[in-house]
Image (cartoon, rainbow over all chains, first blue to last red; front, side, top):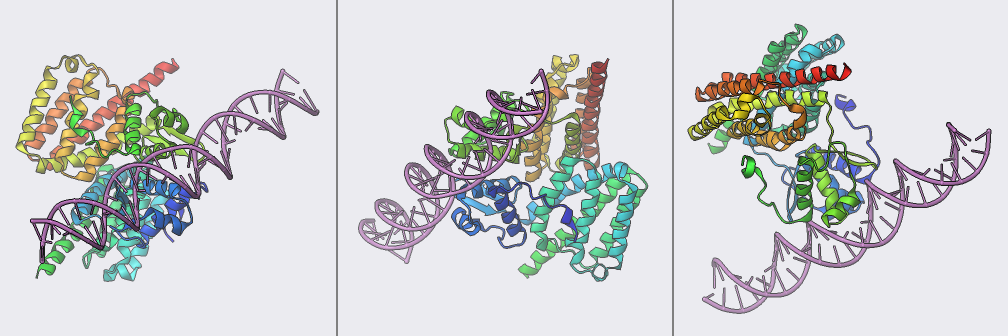
Length: 232
Length: 232
DNA sequence: TGAGCGTAAACTGTCAACAATTACGAGGGT
DNA sequence: ACCCTCGTAATTGTTGACAGTTTACGCTCA
């Protein structure tokens, strides 16, 4: 229900694009898991196309950092360790911070109203209160996405929506939040929205960065404690 | 003399990689100008390879945002208007800001010494004092590059070095600084370095962002006055 | 003379076959 | 038992030919 307007407008009917979209979808759905090898002949046969377009599709996925390629050795679905995910989230803090700053100056009142309604919906959502998974995967990213769009910086929008979010979605199972985190995240969202409504760029950027930093810290805490649990 | 250690370690000997590197070089050297069409047959013949590898090379360049492709219409060297360049510089401010913050905590004393020596060299450079072009294209980017490296965030390094800087270099003729700007930029560099030496993350990020913001403002001022001059 | 149409040339997209490289496993030697 | 070597199979890299689409040119007709 959320990102239905994000999908490409069927951008041409050539086979390489079709293969690209099907592969992207397969990776996102977990059908092709991180680290798994992408055999050209297998995939070409599966999709009923030749190796040429499929190779091009893989190249495009490589450009989006969804697959890694080694010469004469094939392509694999990208597999990030915890440190790389943390690196990614640091970049996200920076980019969404500046996006929120820009949005503070450019966002339209109607969009502000929409965000307000969104947060009200979150507040009434039982999974937010109880601390379950909905928030992280769905509503949270949607809230961020709308603010990024409001920045008006097309390249920034593309970087976050096409590159960053797809990677984060791919590793969302390792981004599960600590108990009680969703409720706190909702409060931080409210702070972001308040800064946007006040048209305060400094505060908007600061609030968004604090929010993402807290989210990252919560995750890294889980990871470290999990690691300790594995040792014990 | 500057970025010699940046070049790839001859990464394999397959033709598509070779073509990719040659094309990238040709674009960077201005041999292929922004907006110019990339004919597959022409380039394939010129490089003595088939259209397959060349197509793959173009796809890789597209992934790096150096060329844009339209279905059934071919690829063109990317051509950015002033607004797009400004968008790019806003993103640069954000990313280099966070890179500088990270560097404040991680940069090694030897590298700090190196940066110090670099700025001394800039100060004695006549072109900096007189306000000519050297600073913008060469030493300035090198100074930034070293700090980005010191951030220790591999993905951030890759984003800035491979994606951002190549694009900026491509449009460097439109990034010419205002008279007197190099001297001021040198002072701002000193402020950045001082914050790094003080191991102050907040100040380091703030100094770097101020520096890039001033640089951007100087450019946009030039652009607007140039536009006015053209009208007059 | 100019607008519209049709054909042809040029170009990108796709395919199947061939070449080169790598990975795997059997065999033999130490 | 372990390791090295060689050969075979599987996989990626490359090529030239073919198909579909777009573009440009010239021709016809008002």
